[in-house]
Length: 204
Image 1 (spheres, rainbow, N blue to C red):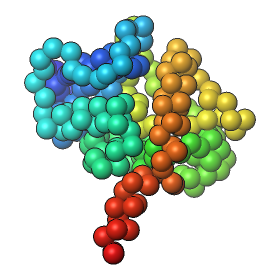
Image 2: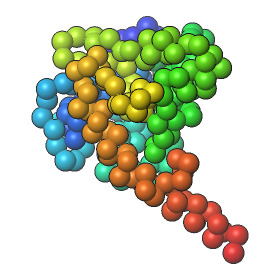
Image 3: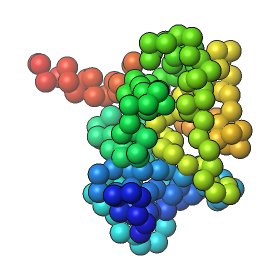
Image 4: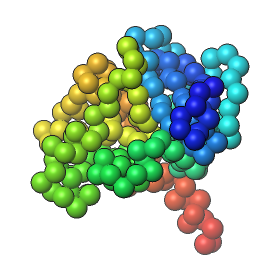
């Protein structure tokens, strides 16, 4: 348990297909998601050991488990609440990340140029790229809120995946995009076909 300003943070470590993931959050939401580079990858995703969790942190764990194991059902779960101080600000970077969080769902990708256009500033391509760069907080740890804020879905204009986690997590970005591409076959415009069928059936 740690203290971050007025928030008391709780931590939980998960094993996952992309390596160990360290979640940190308070009672109001998730602060950071750290993907530990160089750690063992497992087919399942589950907590490592016993950890005290707030309801919001548990909701994030449930969301990640669904994302990795049943991504076609991710639309049935509420998105985890984010409470990192930056995400509460009115900064340009916060605007870039919130737009990505809200507009680029599972099954979608955008280029840096398209993302700049989405925030209403087509000339801000470099600034958008800079806003998504997340610096490591300590050796072999990548910090911020990846996966939930899907920076991995932003590609180069050429269609290349581009770098991830400062170039150290390029294989993780490829894995995530491939994982989502498999699911994309049952999505239309980022929404599950299954959910659409259920909605349509309600009218008959």
